[in-house]
Length: 194
Image (cartoon, rainbow, N blue to C red; front, side, top):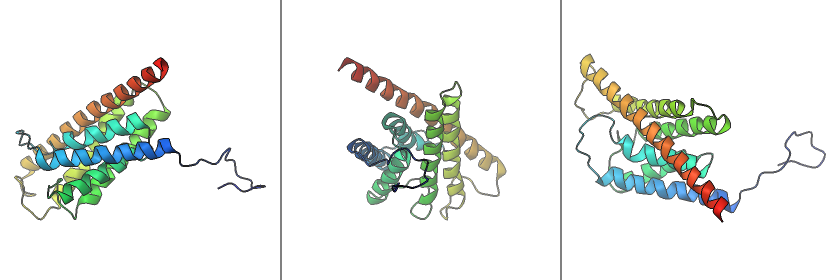
């Protein structure tokens, strides 16, 4: 808060508006829907890291579409809580969930960088953020006390699982970025026509 006579360089006090509240409420609702999808949809891929397509695409698309600063983190946290309440498992269970939240923070940072600098490298940056977030989830799986289909002693299985996580993270980052830009384009056209 800026006081009268203060030497702050802040031009105005930024208040919490109804639009901000609506953006975060939308992010939380999309996160709950993603949590439902993670809990009940069983894709027949049977590859490590494929569930990221169910929660990262909506989180990143919502973050870019609503322009909420912590939109992806809000969506990911709602996904975590919905998954836990429904008895689902999001890549490691209760103890490893902070790393999924860290993946949401990674998406928020990348989306903020993309919003500040419009460049041809925006989509690859979002893809790399998706791969980084999914690799964080892979690291979580390494610490999981339940046995996976790979062991830490078998390097070939470990590299295969890491490559699969990277691929699905890149794919989720690209699709989520395209969905977010599509939402923004639709919103701008709708505002112009109104």
